[in-house]
Every structure is written in structure tokens, then in C-alpha cells.
Length: 281
Ligand SMILES: *[C@@H]1O[C@H](CO)[C@@H](O)[C@H](O)[C@H]1NC(C)=O
Ligand SMILES: *[C@@H]1O[C@H](CO)[C@@H](O)[C@H](O)[C@H]1NC(C)=O
Image (cartoon, rainbow, N blue to C red):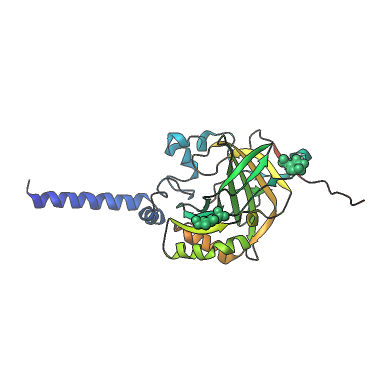
């Protein structure tokens, strides 16, 4: 065969392939694929081929996303929640540690390099490894979703995960995120995968609220691993619209949200810790 004709065939095949891919995938997803290799794997878009309803079919290791009975997030409906005082105050020993900000393609994560401290649950220490944000919230309270949810991801020495979730609604700016704004702006302008941010103090992220929900669920992104101890702080904090937009822009996924739809509660218990008010005398 003549070399020119060969080349012609290759070019038309490439063009055909290209136009088919454009037809098959939504335009934002196609754009995102060029930037990182993460987006291709799963999407938050409900009607996408790799959307939340299909996560469990994408990879064998992700099957829990489709057939798990203890998946997260869930709706924290009052009639299912029982008050349990013996859960106790959430005790943590967070400390300032060096960290990096990472664009994971579907969210922005702060990953601690040093020892950022731990939280104690049932006598086990869960070390803080990373935190990231979803918008709007993934969990809801009596069907209501707020504007943003922070996830503080902890791990025990036996690799068991415990995640603390904090809700935000639009209002005054969040002081913890404020310190990260210059880095978010850098990533938003130019998609970088990672920036060192120096010392981050997780004490500023969680706040001092003491009432929380507790249930056992899963990671809310593939592989949707189950057995995660969830703690959701009841008090809703505030984040400015600018901060929320900055977080979304930094991801460069062209999506408006990165929240997994709610999952079935099934037979799980949802409990809540509510401290007894101490009388002074
Ligand atoms: C937190 O510490 C207090 C005081 O030491 C203790 O009574 C409580 O049980 C601890 N909470 C948890 C969840 O371990
Ligand atoms: C953070 O990293 C710097 C530079 O490596 C180091 O000097 C500093 O001690 C670290 N801070 C903490 C809290 O680990």
C-alpha cells in the first residue's frame, strides 16, 4: 500500500475515533480528561456513563459502590436518630503539621505530611491523614442539604478509617479555608496537581461544637470501602460564596457539584451524642 494512503487511513481512523469520543462523552468530561487522568474514572454527573449509579460497575474493586449495604452518604432523619450519651465527647489531639494541597481531579485535598494528631473513638486512636471538601453536602439532615461538607479522614494503626464531617452554609468566611486561599487561587489559575502549603493546624477546621451524629458507613468515592466510622458534627458552620467558588474552580472539572447521591440506610443505627448540661451548683 502507498505510504500516503496509509497515513490517510490512520488520520481518518483517528478523526473517527475522536468524533466518536466527543459524541459519547459530555464536553466538560472530555476537557477534564486532558488535564488529569482522574476524571476519566468516575464522575458525579448523574447521567454520565461513569456517573454515581455506575461506579460499582467500573472496576471489580469498586463493586461495593453498587452492591454495598452500608454505603455513605445517608440522610440523617430525626426519626431514625437515637440519643446515646455514652458515646462521649469527641477527644482529639490535633497539632500543626506540614501539608500539601492536592487537586485530585474530583476534589481539593489537604494531605498532611507530618503528624497532624488523632481523634479517639472507642479507645482507638485514628490519625488525621487528609481533609477535603464536597459541595453541596453529601449527608443531609431531614432531607436538607447544606452548601458544603468538609471531610477529615483519619486512619487507625490497623488501617480502619474514621471520617469527621462538618457542614457549611454560605455566610461569613471560614477562617481555616481563608489561610489556604492563596494556594487555591494558584491552582485555580493554573491547574497544578500539588502545592506545598507549609504548616496547617487542623484545630481550626473542626471547631469546638460537641453534638454529633455517629453511624457506620463507607467512603463516599470509589472504591466506597465499608466499615468507615462516621462522625457528623451537628452545628453548621459558614463559608463565603467566594471561598466555595474558589474550591470548585481549583478542581478544573467543569462540574457544579461533587457530591454523591444519598444511599439507603438499610438496617443501620444512627446515633447522636448530646452532652448533659452541667449545672454549676
Ligand atoms: C473523652 O475524654 C473524656 C475525659 O477524659 C472521657 O470521659 C470521654 O469518654 C472521652 N471520649 C471518648 C469518645 O473517648
Ligand atoms: C515543617 O517543615 C519545615 C521545613 O521542612 C520544618 O522546618 C518545620 O519544623 C516543619 N514544621 C512542623 C510543624 O512539622
